[in-house]
Image 1 (spheres, rainbow, N blue to C red):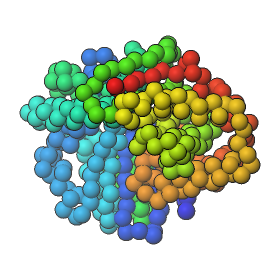
Image 2 (cartoon, rainbow, N blue to C red):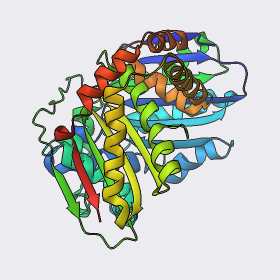
Image 3 (tube, one colour):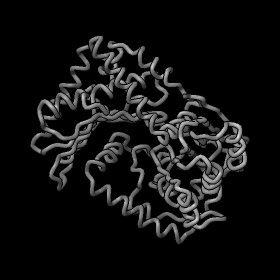
Image 4 (spheres, rainbow, N blue to C red):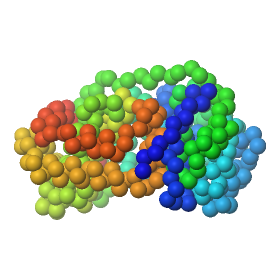
Amino acid sequence: MENYHFYQLSNNMRGVHQHATSSPIAHFGITIKSGSREEKENEQGLAHFIEHTIFKGTTKRKPFHILSRLDVVGGELNAYTTKEETCIYASFLSDYYERAMELISDILFNSVFPEHEIEKEKDVVIDEINSYLDSPSEQIFDDFEDQVFQGHSIGRNILGTKKSVKSFKQDNLIEFLKRTYIGDNIVFSSIGNISPKKFEKLAHKYFELPLWSNKKVDRSPFEDYKPQTISLEKETYQAHCLMGVPSFDMHHPKKREMILLNSLLGGMGLNSRLNLNIREKHGVTYTIESNYSAYSDTGLFSIYFGSEKAACNRIIKLVFKELQKLKTTPLGVKQLHQSKEQLKGHIALAQENKVNLMLALGKSLLYFDKIDTNQEIFDSIDKITSENLMDLANLVFQEDQLSMLIYN
């Protein structure tokens, strides 16, 4: 069921709603093109800090009233920050659509960021930073992006540093909102049992309000990549390794080819080549995977594994062997078909989580101003040939262009 309805407000906010009658649960959220890459050098962590403090009071609600407004009817209110977006969203019984939309509108348009709440939240975020520092398997991903995108805001840690977080003041938060929370940068998305006409009425009522600014913000692209290998000594039982290279952005025509190639090599399936040929065959690692992240104007392909320190170099050689196979040996007809069907199945299964689907609709509208149907996505996957994947492997998996970070 892909009955999407699209909306345009006078403040340039756009929206999409899917009228779904099969469940009593509804999902609504806003997605803002304002993430950590919008931060200036002295603002590191500010986008994420705003995501925390935007719940700390509005012109008409105290924090308790914000947090309990949906909780008292069994709903959930949440938010997250990425390199390129901030999202505020809720899940609730469809009967409470107006309650949820009014609350998120109040948070978006009327947050006041009290100084005493800012000071309290600094300790919370610093605890979050410390928890990442205690988890090398998570920290290495942040450190690796900083290494690959060296000197650019897209590479910096979303959480910021303890020093930067301690420096934030109310004026910093408000200035950042005024600079980035503009109509063209904000979309709303919804899935639930409410008629498109009634939803449109609520959208106009609660979101057709003046925003901070209408001045567009241009993102500076990342350009100056230099591959490098870094090995750091860590007091850990395991070695952790990440290798990778900048890759295709979300608008690139080879993006879906890259998604399929990543799925085949080390994606979600237990039958990925890295998992079968390194973990299962050799038994030298518990976790090995590949990842592909497509940003608005760049991307990142990476391979991660954790292992005994003595096995690290052996696993690196085995990974390069798998990359070489993809560069030199085309997939057979059966292998290619199975890989495509697996990817299509993963896409369909992911959409069973309606929260994730609602957020994906918003992101697609934000960056593409349209939403592809499953059939359109599947058709584009079916067009990929074995030669496409081998050419792509030769383009992306150039050993002299791979960066590497090792915690040893």
